[in-house]
Image (cartoon, rainbow, N blue to C red; front, top):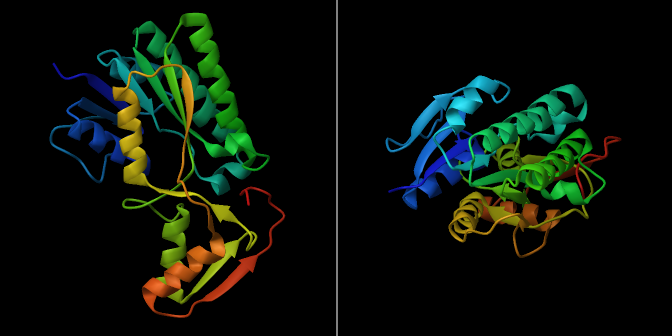
Length: 253
């Protein structure tokens, strides 16, 4: 019998890839999201709902034993001046889901966090992820709810949008012939393809590992200037690169 998995936020960039990877691994996948997926699979079920709707969340979780949570506000720019919205959709929603997991005796709760929790940048987004991780650990301590916290690094790949770094650089390069980057030319990233990240998620669930935190990131550091040089090489075109300064210290270097 196939194990039932609920992927909350399964219509998004990372969530949709994890949902597909789970289906390929023969899990019985249900997606819960406020938006319908642009990449639906016939073998996947879909529930449209808000992550702040306790009744809807509880009904969705009721029939599943493994819960992934990729929902919430993920864009750093959107979160910088919106502490109330970030608290609602990243912290309160996580608590609602955790409470329902306990009520329905879920076997494993897998939470999508970020490498931003380790540094001084990230604004309210970072704070919301730190707070949510603490809630998860307290739910484990108090109610013995098993969990995995996955701290993702810099993702890229198919299904991304303008909020994704690599997508944004490529879009600028193709449409304008230049790239404007807010931040330092000394910035370094460890890129990981979203499909590789999704595969790691499935392997961790299969391994039956519990109550651990993992950083899911690329192996090799790449300077942002090298990334831009690679884009120029691929396009066979010299681009105008401009580094912009900002007082908003949101992105890590």
